[in-house]
Length: 275
Image (cartoon, rainbow, N blue to C red; front, side, top):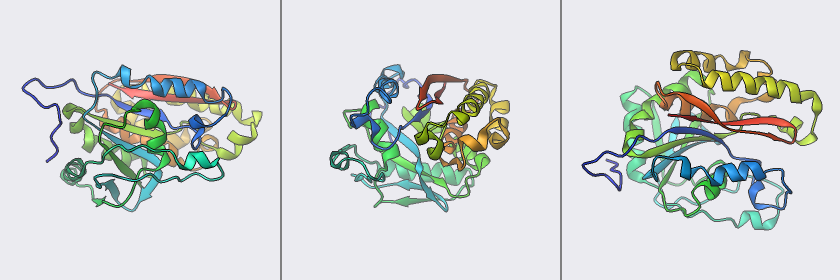
């Protein structure tokens, strides 16, 4: 069974859950003047906002989908450079954070208790939705990290339920993080189309209002996200939004709030915290 490294008679504060942007490929490690500076500054300051240093981190990335929820269970996961056409040095980036087979096993147990199927994968490494933001947010790479896949049905209610099953980890000083992008239409992102700017703002306004709503209303609205203003223009496919559902599910009744807001390449982006 997973036991926090700092466990003692005094229980640590419960960790929040987060949904953070992971940028575009290895964007923070390139000469890309000012475009990603605000996001990089936000990620670098993230650890200081937590109640204490986590004993472990569970990350749900928009870059891994499986038939059932799957958890990395290796002791030293390698990196998956799943981006294309970037400078050679970005394929030599390193993030040697350890894995945690014990935490992976505990997650499988929590999912089973909730009636949810799962599997472990001891071979899979961390995709760039994990290691790129963590290189900034937890640069020392000294906290065990476990990655959790999305389910390829892309069902928002299911991902809320997966998050709810993981909620007990928060009291064990485990940080649950969803990484993706609150706007993810690459075709419009990269061509700077002003036609899509207003729908991006409208969806961001809806999403931020939804996150700050009481939990039952919040979760209901998240299951109906595709009906929001500009939703399908912002997310032609929702894999980069679903990590937010896991973070919201793990939040229980904790309040949600916007903690990051930016305009990147003309598109409005946000990050959120629960608890």
